[in-house]
Length: 242
Picture 1 (cartoon, rainbow, N blue to C red):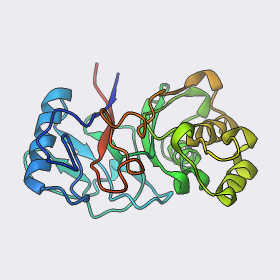
Picture 2 (picture 1 turned 180 degrees about the horizontal axis):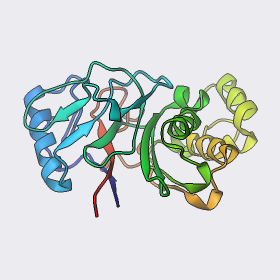
Picture 3 (picture 1 turned 90 degrees about the horizontal axis):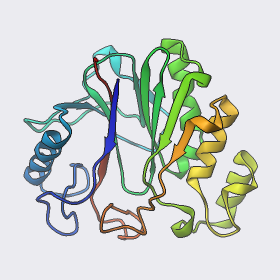
Picture 4 (picture 1 turned 60 degrees about the horizontal axis):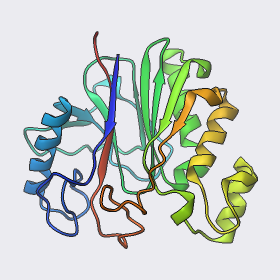
């Protein structure tokens, strides 16, 4: 069985501009507030430990089965030293997580093995095909076949709010097809869906959240809509013993 989800920005103790359930310590919020928020969220989801990396918009995929010091212990402050933007595991136990505030959280479940993965895909990671890199790493480590995978793209900034340069639009069109933009605005969702389909994931096995983080700042943090000073949501996935 798999457990997965994403925090909202409401229900915590952080003050403006991080109001209120900011779960990241690297954005300038009070460490005490973040710790309290993590404890609140932990109780809500029933997960006490999350493995995550220090995100740098890379294509580095970390295999979380290797005993590396990635642990976020909800009872105390602790931050990982390992950098990366995706994690994978075939073990039951700790959840895997990524932080976002407009970037796309990509949830992956290999139902056959089973194994799981989660990736943080901004425009840099998407253009560099972090979704496919994560799938390939799962194949190498666990024997994952893309035909056995279910993929979900969580809430993120959508085409309606994501105006980018013409140069970047051209790069994405060359890599992922013309349907990834409308001439002025980019769809990270379409680019990630297209690369997963190219990798062999059935289109019917991919779902996309309809929520735009920049449109719904009452529910989500948005780096773009809030001019770079805001909190972060946590997306997590966990293999659970039945």
